[in-house]
Image 1 (cartoon, helix red, strand yellow):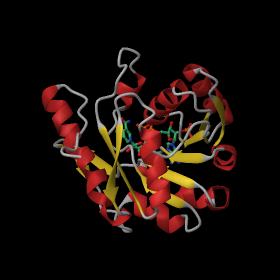
Image 2: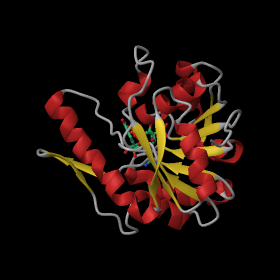
Image 3: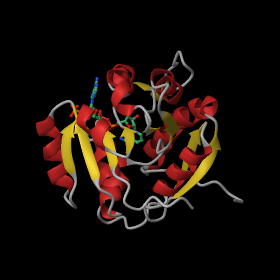
Image 4: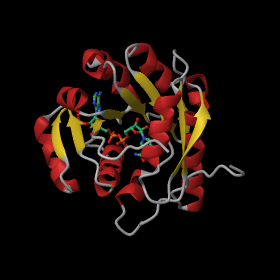
Length: 217
Ligand SMILES: NC(=O)c1ccc[n+]([C@@H]2O[C@H](COP(=O)([O-])OP(=O)(O)OC[C@H]3O[C@@H](n4cnc5c(N)ncnc54)[C@H](OP(=O)(O)O)[C@@H]3O)[C@@H](O)[C@H]2O)c1
């Protein structure tokens, strides 16, 4: 497996539930973690709440400084944020975990995305970065729960670049219990993002924080 020890992880929108949850798990695995926000103050507050050496800064600083950058903002702000950080993110592996979902009285549903998926949108906006789609199905609640030592799920990792997907699979595996599984090219990211709507339905019916496991590998 790719050696990811010591890699610093930056999280754009790291002040939200998902960003803080991932930050906490990577910080526990001794990775330097940089939490990004539109506000340096909010970023620092979130970093303080994580502890374990996490630091906070504006998204642009995080995009510049971190070795690997995770995008954890709502789909609404996704394209504009990445467009504004194209130069900072050039040459980097950018991990997109954004699920373009809508919610109505029937529950969650997948939104259409012109580029095909949020991950393909990121790849279109960031031609000089290596975009990898991953971490769509991990529950922020589980990531934040100190009672959960092992997170019971596979993380599907999709991308065009083998070296980048191998690295992200190895990063997923630093979270105890998690396995990173290659899930195909970015053109297949839409259904991975959309599957989150099914998991939300499952969670509501069974009062759970469901994840997925891939068998026979
Ligand atoms: N929550 C989960 O369990 C979960 C699981 C898997 C994947 N995801 C995906 O992860 C992403 C983040 O989820 P979340 O629940 O953490 O979302 P969130 O709390 O609503 O948002 C995360 C952060 O994004 C920033 N943000 C909000 N609107 C923005 C905009 N228009 N432009 C730039 N930044 C903006 C905010 O930070 P500042 O105000 O500090 O800038 C906010 O704290 C989503 O795309 C979601 O689909 C979530």
